[in-house]
Image (cartoon, rainbow, N blue to C red):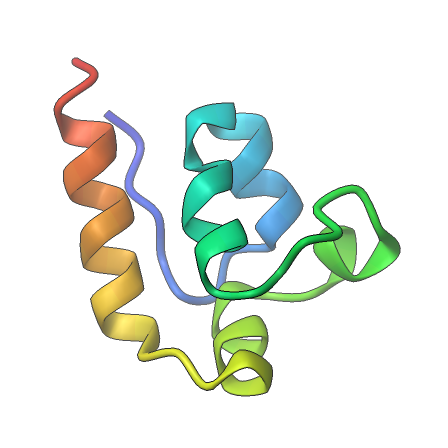
Amino acid sequence: MNKVTKDMIIGDILDLDRSTAPFFLEMGMHCLGCPSARAESLEQACMVHGVDVDELVQNINEHLSTKD
């Protein structure tokens, strides 16, 4: 399994597994195809949207671990 880290680019996380999209939509990041998603790290996006990056990383990694 690939692990998501807070320094990963959001677009790379989506490329890794599209089923992660709802995590971003829930935090208010609705433009997953926009340039920000291809240039912004998970940590940067969390700062902008007021989300705890460590909690989100944990939730995404738990989600991905259930897919193995």
